[in-house]
Length: 530
Image (cartoon, rainbow, N blue to C red; front, side):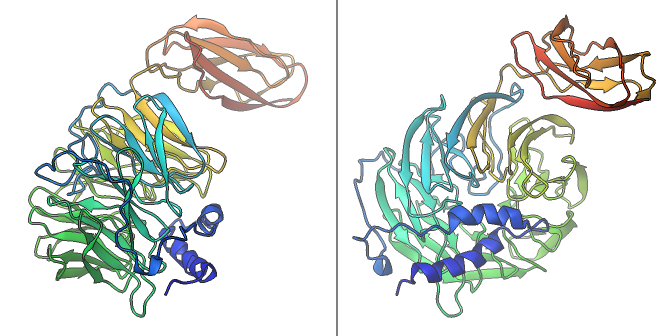
């Protein structure tokens, strides 16, 4: 029996509170999400949702299936591969953080970004659409589901795109954007888990349902035609994304504080208990070690038999993917970005900036070992993408959201980094690559107080990431301004003099632009003259 829309919304509120859970739980963030998430689901009246399993539509001819079920593309699924290494085979050494283009959508982008063999970029959005965007940033097509999309797409070797939705369905979408089939996971079985595709084409994912006694979560395995292969009821909600071992073992976390391991036939192999929720995806090292985080403050490493290898304290815990660098270093986010050695010791931790943390953005790693991740600032005050060198130093960053960045980035064959942003007014898919970037904000140095009528000197300096010459613009806070002055060499310090003719507090503002007109943000210095 399908629940009424009103009953569903009551359950959805509980599910949303769980999905948003972290040590930084924000009521304002939940409120923003609630507006779009709790709109009535759209349903096709011709579909029998209570008995829905496989509803083919406009199935296209497909190419021959490859040796594995996944497309051989730069980034075919969330966290790149079935082991969830989140590691690209491509370099980003020339990526200096220039915004190549932005694609605007109607609501929040919370999931990960994937790329097919032709460079087409796919992602889901809170506006209920799965988007396909061409490499030049133009829309190829969009496919509408019946609810909000938090899940990330996965691309099969035949070009079929699989993605979950809050309409309780896993959708299979043809390469032209038409529906191939959709699988109904059950009453209130919201799917935020991102699917993974096995070597034989089996699609695995978790669900927060169905709504039955003693069943709050279920792990599904589907055949490529959309029919059910097996399911396993955990009794606890699942938002984690499954990872696959070399032997076909399926690993996935749950709200019941467990990491589960299943044989390929769906029977339980083992489960490992932690001290809190296991919301995020696990990853698997080359030697079979399984890494995953819990909100009991630890990153765990398990042997393939489920025995504890080590655990390492990582701030307040984590639900990001434990991404694995080229040298085996494990990267997880939380109050900082943590780099953990394969033996469980901390290699370094990166301070994200004032009031910043990583919630659900899983780090992506280039072949050079450069790490990319999204952040939250405060509750809903903005979000950055940050590029971090393998030694833990900052490479570049860019403010891309008014609310937050929980999207998981990906890397294409040209070293372009894609990531989504979440803002109430305008959310975007961003493409970062090699190009012209604006100068940094200038630093301002000089006295913070003095006497009216006397002349004081202030120095200004900044650098341009491309090494271009720089112009400065200064507002002195008393109505006078310098206009654009320059050009000066990148990194050159300049000195300007000013006299205030009446007492009070003033704010000096300065910004810079390069020779191509790209401007920095404003920097400020408050001064008082008596």
